[in-house]
Length: 247
Ligand SMILES: [Fe+2]
Image (tube, rainbow, N blue to C red):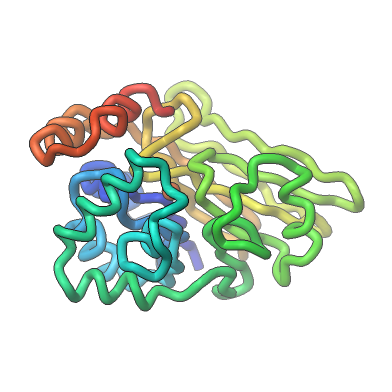
């Protein structure tokens, strides 16, 4: 079974459309690690498409804030403005869908999914030290996480955690990780809608764990088209500009 792993879509329908075209015919089922909405201009379109894909989907911190499951007090003023903008525009059935999204971690077909950390869905896993508890406790050898918007991850073999970086070679849309027996992995597919690792392209992954492979993809999309819609929508300027830099 080949799984399409989507995360941090952030209301960016142009990026999601481009990713789904690039991945066409290469996956059987999809999972979504949360943050369907927030920041971007297309909340209903993205939620509609994720619902159509029938993914196993868990909630992210933006999904919780937009739908009122959590308050947006901990968000910075710019992110909070986008939360309020999104809440006003989501159709009632999409708001209800976000309200009912389950919390991670969840088990899916021999692997796990979580938005942030294994023990705290809202925690950012930036370092091996922060990854270690999750690597030791995860019920499956492979766990996919999001939230940091940084494609890559961590592995643990024995007592030694390692940092994993993926960067497709020139002319290649993806690089492939081979899953080694006896090693535990926390893997981040990257963000569809708002990259933060200096690479403006949309990130996602395709996992075929029967073949012990995970492909880490980066696909260019029409960033300017998204920025134009954000400008028309009156979304905050810093959120528009950061898409140009992947920061
Ligand atoms: Fe996010």
